[in-house]
Picture 1 (tube, chains in turn blue, orange):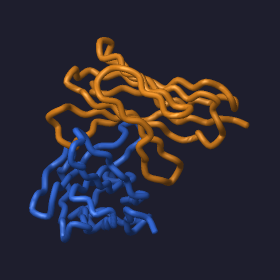
Picture 2: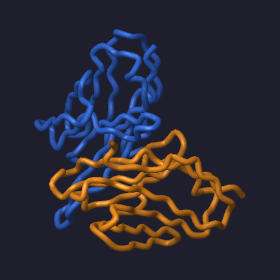
Picture 3: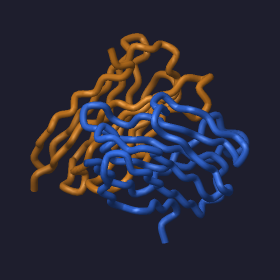
Picture 4: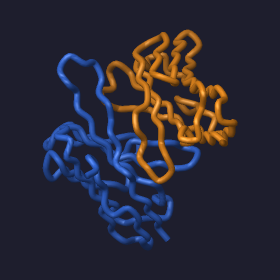
Length: 116
Length: 112
């Protein structure tokens, strides 16, 4: 079984609809992230969470919200989807083992979202 | 201007070639440098990680960081068709916690 799962894998929706993308992980990591990937722009951070009570905005959080329901679950919501939110969305997790100065991010398989 | 610039390619090479992938950056505060590999319809996976300047080798892969030129490279020796993927560079500052800044990725195809 995959360590980081995302649902749905593909979604087509209409402008103005509310959409939720879900991420679950079995790695036991405290840190979770949501990115979007666009051609020519690479991966950009939307929101991140270092534990259940800690939520932080990334570089492009406008139009998005998140919920950290548990250590293993981190959801991304688009309250009112618009066409320029059409992108590939990735969830990632990481942990910082004792004695190391940086962590490694592990990515899920992605959700392809199309907003018409 | 983007903090991290990466030529998107596409780059096509014959099997067995040496591949050189590069990124330049503008923020001198970046201290951690990573290369991620992303296969089609998959999430990125960490390939190499380097702290500050220098070289790091792992099998057929070598990562180089030149902080004086703000330039990082990934070399792939004896390239294989299975190396066909998009390669993304990523960087972070000492004080940015886990926040990474990514290049847009270079699409590589290794032809048998």
